[in-house]
Image 1 (cartoon, rainbow, N blue to C red):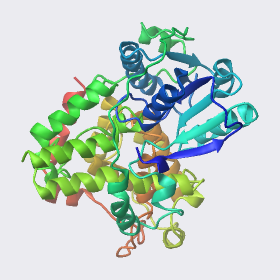
Image 2 (image 1 turned 180 degrees about the horizontal axis):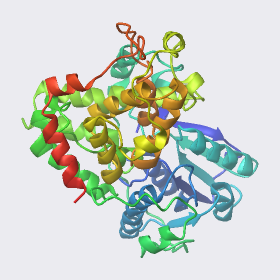
Image 3 (image 1 turned 120 degrees about the vertical axis):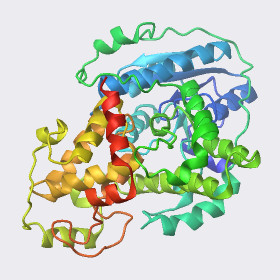
Length: 456
């Protein structure tokens, strides 16, 4: 592992540690987890006990039954995997800083994976302040290929500005190592919650219970690997036609990446192997590599360096705000409120189909996500209202909502990481999309038929 992934946040003593505690939160996986591997190596080197903690927050902002079910399916799998590897593992419930205090003694070392969004970063800051006088804290950046602070020290303007930086650093951070076996004593820690019956436990949480779990996605690394293999063997050959909404040639791995159930570096290694074995050609490899590496890490750069990434007044560029101001009073032939949009009650069958795909499956084809968001801009009283509605629906129904990619994709519709286009009513110089363009490029009836099948 490239040691530059590791950042010492707090160091209280150079003496040997009593115990190594790894707080697993963003990287919810065993495989390709640099933070876990580092914790095991440190525990083995110091001949100290290791314990891995996952903390369940009772009510993560905007997360609902659908999100918790997917996440905990993955955690249940990790719990079983850790037991097989003789790695002590415990699940806590409640405030991370309060729960970690229960496991940490003086001179213990706390290892944690890096957080990028507001709430995970706030949790980590609370932990730092709680234990800063008693424990060394070490952070490992494992959810991106090139650590976000090394890739760039500022918010990048677009893919074309960050791409050369990332490509230059890729080889140095292509640093996967097989997970080292833990040599210490296996100790059983009592968890705060049991995952034997996920339905019962989730029903007890103080969260929105109205958004049901989706039958089209099951959480966990095993399912992510299965989807990746299906993608390589059956879909990747047609990947360059991925924009067609009815073609179904995308990997559908974004929910697994969102919860850290699979690593983007493992995906890159898998597609490299597929290219070597002639499952995919060079153009297809480059297309996938661009998305999973450059575009994804551009999104992490955006949310990390823009602390107001989810606020309308701070999420895009000056030219975008100017064109929106100039067109705020444009005549809008159609206006829909949030409830009408959410219930797919518009005049546009393609928007309605996209909305229903989102509601029933927890996913939406990427091209339709753009179209869907553009229509909300056109059909809202103001750009700010449109933005808030889009984020609300995005975070409520998508399994990969509340994600760096997700916030960045929404902002893209308002000009972030894009350029000024030919001026037109309502959208001004923002990129325009319409139903005629969909019909010209794609078999949209095939997409509508697919969405209808989800409802049966």
